[in-house]
Amino acid sequence: MKALDQKNIIVGICGGVAAYKSPELVRRLREAGARVRVVMTRGSRAFITPLTLQAVSGQRVHTELLDEEAEAGMGHIELARWADDLVIAPATAQVLARLAHGMADDLLATLVLATEARLWLAPAMNRVMWANPAVAANCRRLEERGMRLLGPDDGSQACGEVGPGRMLDPDEIVAALSGRARTLAGRRFVVTAGPTHEPLDPVRFLGNRSSGRMGFSLAAALAEVGAEVDLIAGPVRLPAPPGTRRHDVQTALEMLTAVRDRIDGADGFIGVAAVSDYRPVSVAEHKIKKDGQDRHLRLTTNPDILAEVAASPARPSLVMGFAAETRSLEEAARAKLVAKGLDLLAANRVGDGLAFDQSENELEVFSRDTHWSLPRKPKALLARELVDIIVGVLNAQESPSS
Image (cartoon, rainbow, N blue to C red; front, top):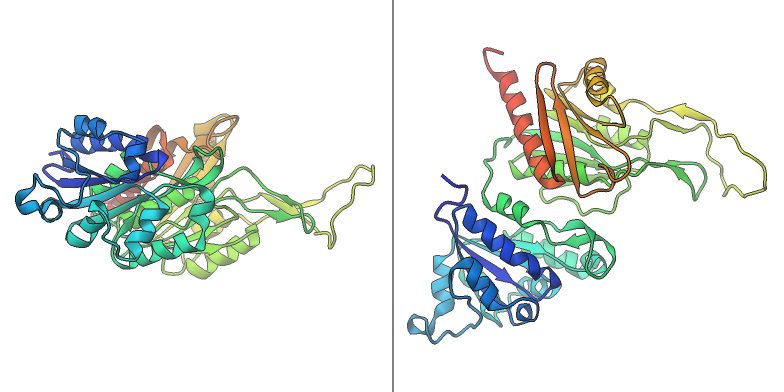
């Protein structure tokens, strides 16, 4: 049986450039077995035509609140009763504001008020708009009412800027609507993500190119299947995934303290963060001025957070690490797995255009006796595959025969 077999899904499309992704979303939903009807706002028709959506959905597209062709002219009530899910993709800043204030001034907004279906919102807007406090307040209000936010993603935008605000990939939206089982309900995980910044002076630091996307995606995927997640984040500009508790840090020592404070009683620890191996022995009180002379930087080793957790008396049932390698990936990964006493290690190659600061990745995952190869795909989808592996390892640990 397909993931969304016989589900009735309304796709609402708003007036944003990300509407070009909506026909692909409709197609993917139908491939997953869903019956799909499309509702378009007036603004959306400036970006894409109803005829296109009619072709991919196989159904007449709905655009008007009062439909003369509908039974008793009450098309919005018929649609509201028909739907199992209503997903608005893209959901613009304007529609988020209208929904947050209970507006019913067009067909789509009225459907949101009139339906008992599950409601999903896939925001899409400029990064500055997404960061605006008014948008954040509207999103919080909608989530408090039970609506589920899908994204947004982080990356290049049509306006030429880069940052959070991109509509999620259609495959990721379909995966969310497919209703993955809450296989980790009642479990708690501590996840580290992003880089650490080790200060040299008040304006400079040692760091790396980690964007935090993989760690944030994994935290989101764990929460999606019911886990309670403490996300300890280095300095990144990403929105906290829904259903997680975010704790921001800057340095490796701050990250270690945050982990120690939260690891007791956790079922799993996943160290995705690219923690700096070294930090300066001393930090200049004032900005270091260029004086034409060479300078020598003395460094000291940072603590190994992953190894400390694995050796801790409070060690969780599952401890997983990540490794970034430029060569001899499998050999280095297996050595690290054993040396640090880990249950799982996910390794990827890094270099020009690979892994760091990219929206996609590929991973080789190792346990003591198993190897999984996860081919290149968006990090959010990769994270869901990792969660499936994690669930399998935890189940095997608890099996009477293991």
